Image 1 (spheres, rainbow, N blue to C red):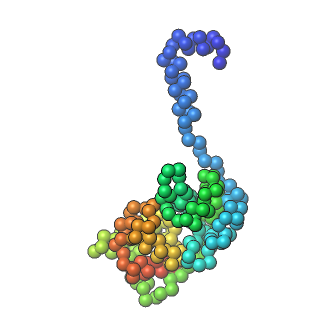
Image 2: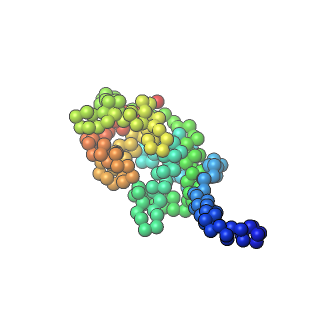
Image 3: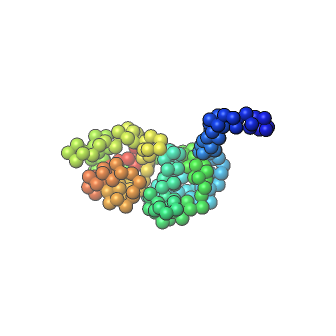
Length: 218
């Protein structure tokens, strides 16, 4: 800006203040995240995640969740919750995952989340025909006498979920789903207050039944 303009502005302090404040506001605006890079996400998945979740996110056993086809926004939030912040404990306490995400940047987490979301999930199946009626009842109708809402109200009739807030459940390993419900019930998983309440109202039998049922949702 040339001297003439600055001299003019000096005579109008209010105008100068407005310009300076406007510049400060623009500098403080958060930057929009870059578009996810699926190739970079695939590289991270292969190098960091594949040993537990498989290269395409279709883990081979219930100890680790299937990530293929899961909502990118939901996966990103979980990675953020696993990551400890300065002076704070992680919202989701898991020493293994804390170590995995420690070296990942925010963009890395967005990239790998988008990559897994782009993969095709392999279908699962309910294994215990004796508990399917109870699992279906809980998933589709809840348990009114316990104040447990229908799972389908948030996760959808086919278990497809909704981005960010409600994960895809269809085809997920029953063992993993059951473990998470128990963790919510026992408050050892601390990043979803409504699920603490819901999990706390379910018995072991009910948890196993609904977890097995959602494994077979399509």
